[in-house]
Image (tube, rainbow, N blue to C red; front, top):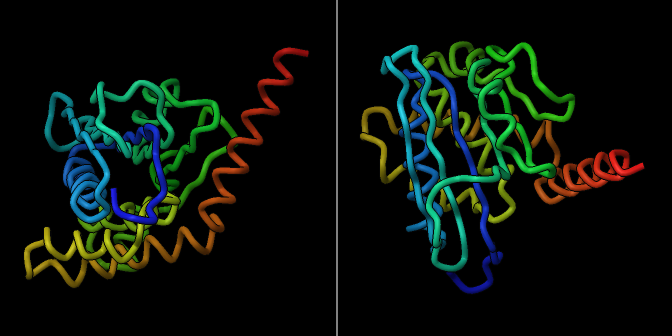
Amino acid sequence: MKKGQQEIHRFEIRLSGLGGQGIITLGRLLGSSLALGHGYYVTQTQSYGPEARGGSSRADVVISSSPISYPKTENLDLLVALSQEACNNYYRYMKRAGILLIDTTLVQHTPTNHFLGLPFTTLAKEKIGNPLTINTLVLGAVTHLLPFAERRLVRKSLEENMPAKIQAINIKAFNLGQRQAAKHFGEAPEIWRVAKDHASTAEEQEHE
């Protein structure tokens, strides 16, 4: 881990949605940036549904300041759900104080009122002009949400891993995702504090 960087015991992320949304690439980009750019220990696993395009797709990323003993996700700190099916299937794996980020274009019903959402599909089509940029839009938003992720380093990793001909449009999408998250969600430390407070309140109510 690099000097001055935030220490992480274990942080679990699941990126999920449909085949064709670039979920696997998103997982690789995020994992690569946090491992090579930031210097954390990272494991990244993935799975596809029965059909590559239109079927389910997910990528899991585990981040830690120390070596990771178990590479798979068990209790999600952050669930990104870009389809209704993904939201329905994976919400139960979240920690109480975890954060759910959804694509409000495709996810109409959530199992909780406490979630963050952006119309990623609509933004990719209408603001960027290319629906295939949804994954780099999400990468921008996720980078904003992670208190330990440096935007500069994630963007650098994106530039290094994208073919030259599609680099500019994906950097544009990344920047838009980051700006939209900052505009609608507030600052990262506060977002996680609110999630923790909500979880504590819910736990207290259960024990009353």
